[in-house]
Length: 400
Image (tube, rainbow, N blue to C red; front, side, top):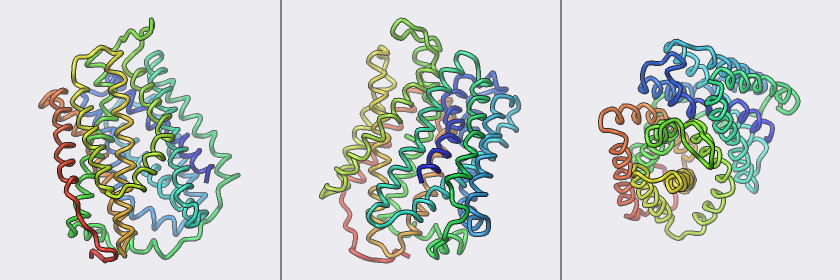
């Protein structure tokens, strides 16, 4: 299980690097607008939406190890290509290929955890897996931002792409050749539209709407626009502790700090959520916090004050993800069709995260960067009011 997490982390570094580098170095890679940046950072997630049902079928037909090896090779090739691409259509193609690779990693990791876990340790193994593979985001954003500001994208793409191929021995040494596929996977491939049926339930629809909006605002939009925000507020040459750093370097460092703190923070928040009598109120408090910090981010503050505000907001965003996952799984645990509910929830999260970068850059051009954050803050406040009203869920039921 640790091996698949580390392999995924190594391959994820190249993807994470782009979220820091492209918003400030887009001209040097042949792009003509920030809207193109948003599309490039979103297309891999759009590709995953139709692929998710197909990937489960493919895992039943081809050996687990071979599929992970294929995903590693695709990841290495796409990461290396980032240093040489100068045409927008080729960027779209490479990001779509990475979307296929990530779908294989994501489902493969979940399948491996399920095979080697029991009811007594499944949560621990899943948490360990999620924490370890997110180290790829930390490494890619920190190293990517720093080296891109100093030497450009080509060098960091070569370094991260080469590291991907060095992970191939881990695939053959530590990953099983095949996995035992359970019958629980069958509902996922019955029909392309099965996942839409839970939308008929009001409570679950509220969960999905919240997941979509928060994934779009706090995952897709904020992650993709962070270095651009820093560049707009402080220019691309920032004086920090006697040094001059670029916006990509500062953004990468901040995201790396976030992913370094999150594995220690989110388990404690999860414990608070588990002990809470009114679990919806934990989400309400998180939404209020997010709304406040979204209002503070656009303000004209000195970097020494603005930096901690943004860092806390990033941590709040990570906490909200954990709490919302808890709300969704807690609700699904009271239903008879848990697999379908969580599949639908995952698809909605991917859709929100996919639309985030495009929506962020398009709205910025229409209403401005400051108004964009005030709109996001207002959205969080509306969701807070929605969740402040408790909703009773029967002990057991089937919603479709």
